[in-house]
Length: 233
Ligand SMILES: [Zn+2]
View 1: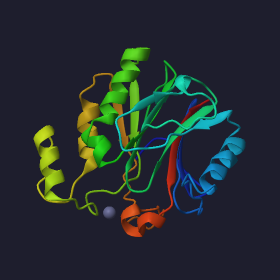
View 2 (view 1 turned 30 degrees about the vertical axis):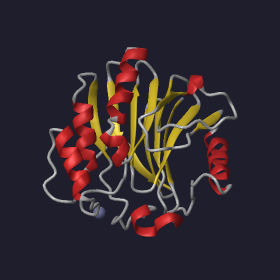
View 3 (view 1 turned 120 degrees about the vertical axis):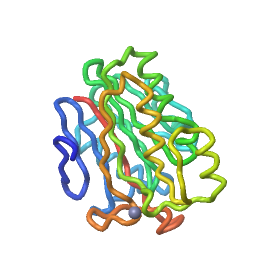
View 4 (view 1 turned 180 degrees about the vertical axis):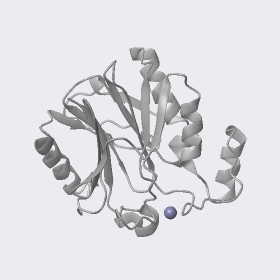
């Protein structure tokens, strides 16, 4: 169980001093899918509700591209799959429906990160690369991480080609076609002495009933999106 984790209006909320983390669910029927207008509106509502100057998000492309919010010009939506920030009162987040949202932060250095790690991003080690950047760019040495709700081994069947790809590259070995993406993410995090904590919300977006999540595997293209984000205040 994660310290200070609560369900507030259907969303998973973790508050730890100045660190605020949210994993939205499908309980409140708020869809953060960007592109049809609704998602953008939902983000604006969040900014106002939480009194944040801005919430940054990316056009996610299943890559290993990491963006620092300092490099974003205000109205542009940049492509990438991880965000890093050193600012207070701004949020950074990623959209998911089955993929893995990972949040990382260093409380002392006041550096935060939000990562979208689907199977492609996980294969490309986007989580490890983001941790690397936090260490190299900001000298982070006390990093805590949380793996958010995603489709877990119980429900995530992939092709043997994908299993073989992962087994060739990583120490963790998958023995069936059901793959545990979080096991690879843990392996990526455990490489760093600077990562002091790896927490896991431990909920499957496909089969969890309470809370309910949007699931791409279950609902296809029409699936809504959850938003996982962090801010410092
Ligand atoms: Zn499941």
